[in-house]
Image (cartoon, rainbow, N blue to C red):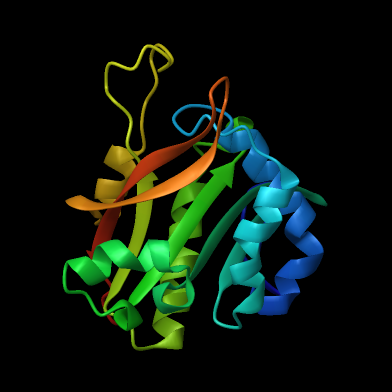
Length: 205
């Protein structure tokens, strides 16, 4: 475990591979809590989470960044080489001619609402992009975000998406570079969801 510079009141730790295992329960619980809200509306369960997170624990080149308030995990962010992720994540980039060996996939970032707006989201991206540079051989960083209709009646009034933040980080949405993932949606059950990729070139250190 490595400790990153402290945001006031928060300590950031980075983990890779098997070092993630003792923290899987905390990460899973956090993901279930945060992703239950719009836009994911994920009715989560620990079995699904353990299966999803196994690929990060199995890869020595993965990264998980934990944001901790004392001993409490209040945020987590994941990443790993796309070539080591499941085929569903690779397929949209392969279909558009990308070498997945040159893409580092920034999985998801989750952060409890009361800790947002303090620079932790930027720190999550900084840590994952720096990790990809240290590993070497990557020309791109990428992530995928769920697609929702702008007029979906379930969208909370006054909701502010992350698009402006992602653009500020240099990421560009790639229309048509989309994958389908299944999860249990609140009040609906298990259905397919479309997620579209965002990419940015990974500059040298």
